[in-house]
Image (cartoon, rainbow, N blue to C red; front, side, top):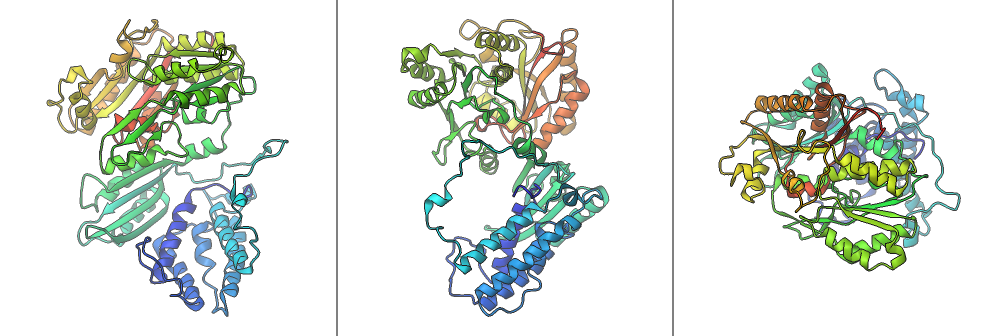
Length: 594
């Protein structure tokens, strides 16, 4: 697969192919319903494949040539009536190889043959052809050993270590966000009406590419349509979709994924920790996802648990507990989400694993005033042998997140430079003195927080009107450059978590003005020569909003370096709602001389 480009079209196109194959074979949309394996002949299967190619072509208007869509479509069109299943799959596979070989001469991005220039074929198409090849080998009986479970275990590199693969992963769309919308269609509307509107925006306003739409009956009656498109403006995508929605204010589902960030996270430059003298054991609440894969990062398994399932989800375990799935579930059906600290034995296991590989372990812990994590970390430390305890630096950061994350980021920066534990801790506390956070929140979450008594300035929340917007957190000149003591010595860290900074009346224009005024005030409160440093922004379910906020901050404020847009951890499911943003930074003069 190293000779294939990287794109995101494959998943939606493959799903579309399978769906259309079921339709062509007169199968039910109910995937849980048993399928009669004796109910289709090889001849019927061949006809279903041919029809599927036609149906896929119809479902994806203006399909981009040289992609999975065109290859899956065209490799079925010259199939002839087979004598048996082996001859059918052989034809299908041979057709696929021929169509795949054409992709470098077909796919153009901004007038350039990007696959040809990179010396690759389309990755989604290649994966599809590989799948058919697997079918062929199964028919030929050449998949010996597939019943051996050890064959499917994760491969490991030999003693020589991981090979150095210098592959250009820059091939891709000029559109950044993979955007999906599920619409409960108004009566009398169909996917053709939706497509006409989207195609007009694509043709006239370059709304996006990789457009796909499917329609199916809704469980509660009526029709549903699912739209997929790659776009730089998900807001406009949703605005078009809402025109056809039975509920004119809310789509059944909206989903935005940052494809550029996904490529960077997978193939981008990694932080070199070859000089690191210590490891870090901490939670995943405000730790950027890029740091979670570092060799000297170890995770304290703090969890969130949705009331409906009772299944604990580890904060920071993005691979197994994707926050986006939880956020989408809560957007559709809000419910209580509980947080829980890990047990001492959970933490002890991580401590021992880290100390088996590293000379020293730094353990920044969530504020003891609000979480039992500190208590259990101390118990885990006490269970270690005296010689291991001497190699651990454990401390209460006093924060629940945000500023806690700035401290962690600084520790990893110091580790990469090969600084000692003492030097790193000193620099970390320097950063903490000017670290700040703020949340952009809406009336829905503020009503809940106020009702729970967490925002004293808003009473019980009964005066909050629907559609209002708020800015919460800590901002200068509060505690600017001062040592921040932990509760109960100072209640700054507790009070500032939900500290009310600004609020405005309902309406998008009011929200924009509130943001602009807040940033203007923030700039005026900066010390001479100070800049915002290590800025990190996350937004629940909407990375496009994070990028828009980042652009505004770069325009209105002095910012050092690039702003990091990251996925929020699933902790925010307990305190935030869809579309709310979180911002973290610290202040100082340019450079790292401190």
